[in-house]
Image (cartoon, rainbow, N blue to C red; front, side, top):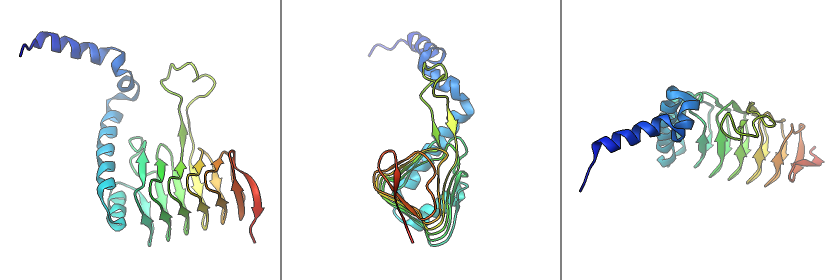
Amino acid sequence: MNYDSGRTRSSLARMTKGKNMKALNEIRIGKALGFIFFTLYGVLIDIVLFSPLKIFLLRLAGAKIGNDVVIHKVRFFNQYHHGFSNLEIGNYCFLGDEVMLDLADKIIIEDHVTISNRALILTHTNVGYKDHPLQENYPRIFKKVKIEKGSFIGAGAIILPGVTISQGAVVGAGAVVTKNVAKNTVVIGSPAKFLKKLK
């Protein structure tokens, strides 16, 4: 095997100075290390089969989680911004398989909330690098999402940044929620629209 250490060193130097490392240059080394740590921590949470142990690990990492909560195979992303401290879950909540939670900003889930399988909760949008041509029209935003007590989020629903799902509301399966949902109402569709008022 022919190994040229000089060529390898120069390739590494070009990689770290060139465009291949643009992401690292934008987020800086501290966030990059946080990304690595929290990605590995997320893998640990993923492989844990039992909800009480998942909850213990999440609390250990800064999440606030109440009593009698069930968390199935939930995926967390963007936790390198603030760790798991952006996650607050009340009592008696249920999060189904393949729910995805964006922890770039706060997600507040109050008591007695059910989030069904494959629902996605986003707290930020970003079209790409700082010099992406669309940044001028669609700048990065970070906004918390709040799901108030007694609400239900249907399978495959998408909740966009800054939305509040008010108390006792129902978001239908596959709905794309772009604005706040009123108390005790049902919304469906894409974008989500009012269907009916609950008693």
